[in-house]
Image 1 (cartoon, rainbow, N blue to C red):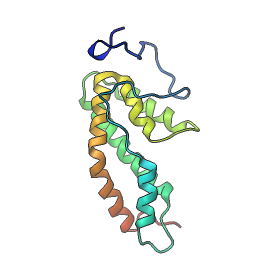
Image 2 (cartoon, rainbow, N blue to C red):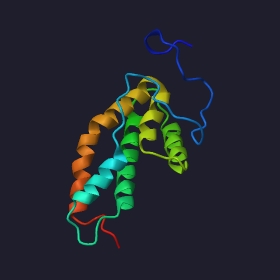
Image 3 (cartoon, rainbow, N blue to C red):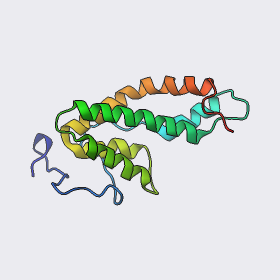
Image 4 (cartoon, helix red, strand yellow):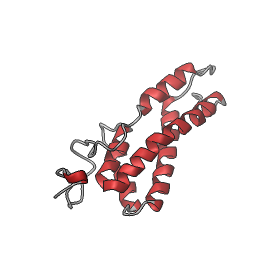
Amino acid sequence: MVGFFGSKSKRSSAVRDWSTGPLVKQSPLAADAPDVLAFAVEAAKQADRPGGVDVEKVLAAIDRMLAGQMDAYAGALPGLDAGQVTQMREALYARPDFRFEMFFDGLTYFGSSGIAMCNGLVEQWGTFQPVVVNLIEKGEFDRG
């Protein structure tokens, strides 16, 4: 099968099992995923919160923001099935080796619309960060 710009495509028409196997970015046109865990840990360290910040709560909030944006993109971009994107996200999240970067790399398996979604999420990452920091400062993710 010929892929983008005449290169051999790594995608197949078979339904992918997201729960196992390696996940590799499928196109050089896709932006590199942000390091979500490193951001959450660093933001929690910098917050001046008595008792500290629960990083798991921070990551859960980031997950909800990413899921919401993925759903919005899936409904707006041609050729994307929102159900398949949700299925991918849920299967990846359940993996014992889960990393947030998998969401971004997984989107590249959905062709040009998936790559557009990946790139859009990476571009929007800069707007997610201050929202999360503001919530941390307000005590939304305090331990306890």
